[in-house]
Image (tube, rainbow, N blue to C red; front, side, top):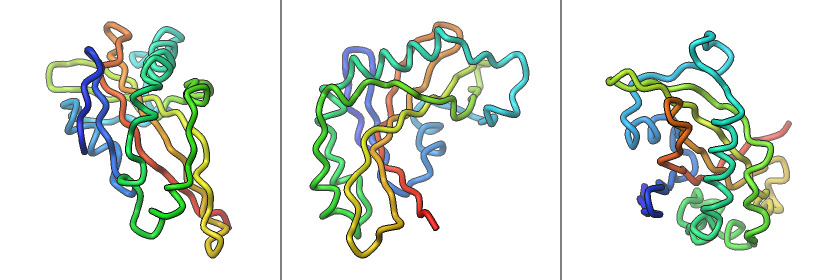
Length: 159
């Protein structure tokens, strides 16, 4: 987990396979998570918070492109991760989704949005394994401000 400061926005890299919510909670003092579908009306998924997350991703595109995704990759996937070719136009933050809500000890409420970037080329001997660069944006619901972005790599095995 390597923090990089961008004016007031901070990138905190999350290695592939690391429990992302645990890392995010530690970096942002989140004490509890609530699944998006289980939250009540006191936890708004507003257009303003979605817009803040998308804007944070697009405005941080140069820094997100500079992340060493190879260093974040699991050892078996380092070679194929090296072939990932990212371009600034891909960092559009579109089609992000609400992952969870979080609360902190001071009563603050947060929305955690996730955005899936380009797929990383697959290993020829593991065609069912799909991996993507992914960015999590943590939005303060009282201000609709993003203080932290969390770039990572996530994957799924299709059967």
